[in-house]
Image 1 (cartoon, rainbow, N blue to C red):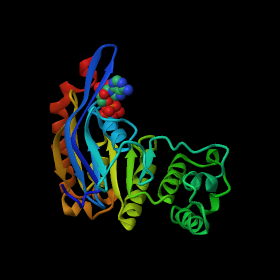
Image 2: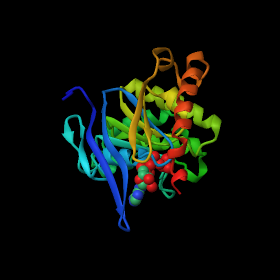
Image 3: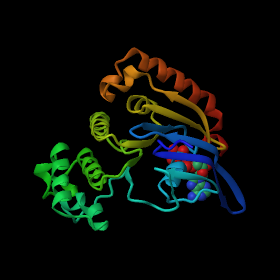
Length: 265
Ligand SMILES: Nc1ncnc2c1ncn2[C@@H]1O[C@H](COP(=O)(O)OP(=O)(O)OP(=O)(O)O)[C@@H](O)[C@H]1O
C-alpha cells in the first residue's frame, strides 16, 4: 500500500441496476493519486467519469472495491474533499461574500482567521470589490471564481472538479483554467478533474486517465511531458508536443467511437 497517496482506489467496480437491467458503469478500476498531483479522468460519454468522481466523493457506494483518502476509507462525504461543478450553485439571495463563507458556516469554522482567509482569496480572484453584489450581477466566469473561493475557503486537501469550465465561453474558460492551476499549485492541492475535452485535460494535468465505456475501464494512462506541465494551460497549447499528444489521444477516441453511449442506443 502506498502511504504517500492522497487517493487510492482499488478493485473498484460499480453496477447500476434498473428495470432488471444491469449496467456495468465501472469495472476493476485501480488508481492512485499522489499529493499535489493533478489528474484528469478523460473519456467519451458514458465511460463512468461522473460515477467514479461520485464514489471518490463518498456520494455513491461502489458495488465492489474501496476508496481511501489519506489512508482513510471513504463511505460518506468528508470535509477533506471540496468540489467545483459545472454549475456554480451559488445562492441567489446571498451576497458574494456570504456565498463564499457558506462552507465554513456549515462546518462551524467561521472565525476571524478563516474570515481573513476568505478576504484574501476574494482579493486573489479579483473579486474584492464585488463582495456585496448578488450572483446575478456577475458574469459566469466571475461566479465560477466565487465557487472556487467557496471551495478553497474550507481548505480541503483534495479538489474534485466536475467539468467546471464547460458552461463558460472559450476565452473565459482559458483564463479560468490558468487561474485554477496557479491557485492549486501555490497551495500544493491534489485535484481530480472530469472532462471530455482532450485539450483541457492535456493543458491542465500531470497525468490523464483515459477511460473507455461499456464497461467503464481504464484504457490508458498518459503522463504529461514536463515541458507542458510546467507551463500554464493557455501557453501550454503553443508547445509542439501538445499537438502530438492531442492527435494520439484523438486516435484513441476514434478507436473507441463504436463503444460510446450513442452507439449503444
Ligand atoms: N443513476 C444511474 N442509474 C442507471 N445507470 C446510470 C446511472 N448513472 C449513470 N448510469 C450509467 O452508467 C454509465 C456511466 O455513466 P457516467 O455518468 O458515470 O458516465 P460519464 O463518463 O460521466 O458520462 P458523461 O460524460 O455523459 O457525463 C452510463 O452507461 C450511464 O448510462
